[in-house]
Image 1: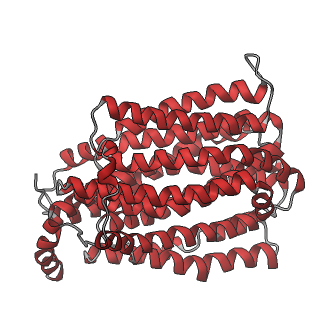
Image 2 (image 1 turned 180 degrees about the horizontal axis):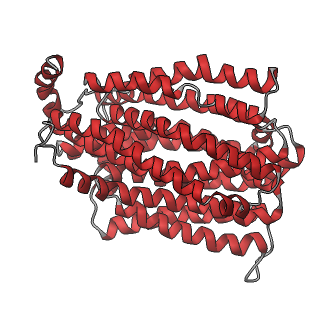
Image 3 (image 1 turned 120 degrees about the horizontal axis):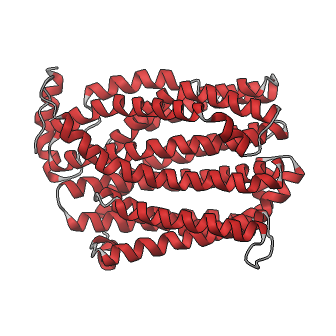
Length: 470
């Protein structure tokens, strides 16, 4: 169905139905995963603030791995969603195979570092010996989970790009249930198991990752989902297709890696704060993940809905959808922020924050509640551009502003001026309003529509001519 772009003719009902059918299962999947992380923190909390802080720093290492492979997820979604729109099975299978190979290479690097060099990793993130020793115990075990977590993410990328979003959601439900139960068993030594403390949390996470992979495979097999099992099609590459894939992925990969390294520098700076602030930051990151996880469902849906139209040559529809998605999703994130703020007391105290650490956590939440509405607006615009074939514009903006404005400000306030932690924290987001204005200009220009399919390329000249005329 073709949508019109006239002021009074946009079909909101069918659009919202399509958005909800994709966004809600993905958001629920992400929320389940983040809720499990939050419960992990709550279950580790009785072990003390040092354990909470160590778990938070280990999560930052996982986030760096996320940055390393997310560029390939973005590239994979770009190709898969557009080929899905033009119904090119070979393109879908080939794109998944290239995405899987690249993502598992990243998993191998980070998994080996966690398993064989956990002390090196922890020394980078903190100078607190007690926190470092706890983190080493956790990383040594959880490194095995990294391989399975990345593999399940690659499969989820394929399933989401072809609008089969329920399978990864159900798999996440099974994984979260297993994680919660095994945390109870291994952390405190229930059902005859030894009390393993922080190592028990790592073991539970590893077992849950295996449950996630197996559930996806089982459900896909029972549902006769074709693309996941056509192994020959996954690796039917040639030089031309590899070049096209990496040309599109390279800017996204650079963006994610350089932003990930930048965030690592920021976390290293914050990791030199007091133990109370480190614990508060760990809890904040968990709650931030709750908000991001909820929002990511809408961001992924935006990528699929816009990318599918671009691939099918329905470029006016893609443009009309993209404009509305930015403001709609920003409104959604505002509502999510208000919900978290309304529940801040039980959330913060439930994760072992009190006194100075509670005050620090609350201040971080208040700052984030304001800035994240703008930040998520930038995020969804960048994801939309990527799914439409423009992987450069948002990447350049984010990298330039991070290294020219954000990191120097954080280092200056954190190390040179020894400013209060909340000033350092605020500096992490000072670029967001400026980037938002620039992203809006690019959005309305329409120059981000860059198809990779024949149908999309054929429709592009007419679309660009319309944009020039206003």
